[in-house]
Image 1 (cartoon, rainbow, N blue to C red):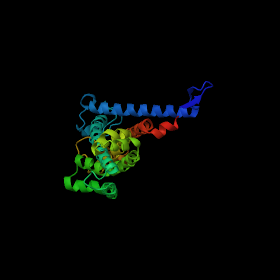
Image 2: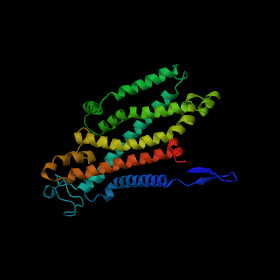
Image 3: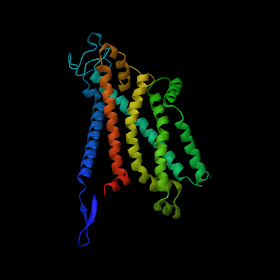
Image 4: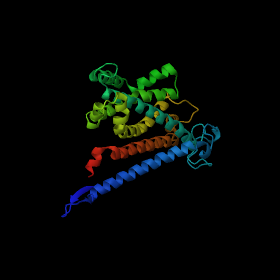
Length: 306
């Protein structure tokens, strides 16, 4: 939106150029669509005991590899005769919960590390700014060096394959990314006048962190955390597909893809194709939502539209 001056000196709002208006409408529609997809998937997964037409673990060898719509199975059955739709619904519970919890934990831990590193001073353990920030951020850099699959394999050896392996692997691999992004934003806020004013008034370190800086970087934290969920859904599905994530008979999108991929050569593509499409759509929805939230919270984006 633009401000123009009238002959009497009063500022009035001018319309955005047509191209900018179309771009904004597309962005808004994309955010609404993404939010609707996420809400629908989350609601259906939450109501799995009510809306799932069959027991997701009920196997019947006499009806395996049914196509969509055959014998009352809307999306067909898999290699064990289990209803694909029911397993997709129940699998959504597992995949979404794991991705949400792990992403939330990684976002909180990474943000706290970034806040402490970005605002540390001689009131923290008697260390100087550079030493505290250096200690934290060098640790973050070391975490970057570990391949994600290697981390997952180590946790699988220590704990055994299962959901904890997925959660811990996601947290360990995502924390350094969150910390780096938020650290840059915190350092930007560190030089602002309101922080200097709080320091001059004698505010303590924790007061500056939680009362002054955190509210001003919360938008970026929400944006990055939201986008992180989509990637973590794909990652958790990958670990389950490799056999070190969620274990059978628990329904999980990644496990469904892995089991379905084994029979694609026989021409039965639906057991792998359908959960793969669901993972793709949900991951894209979270990425779209993150992009939309960035446009809302990012002041640079807002200024570009003025």
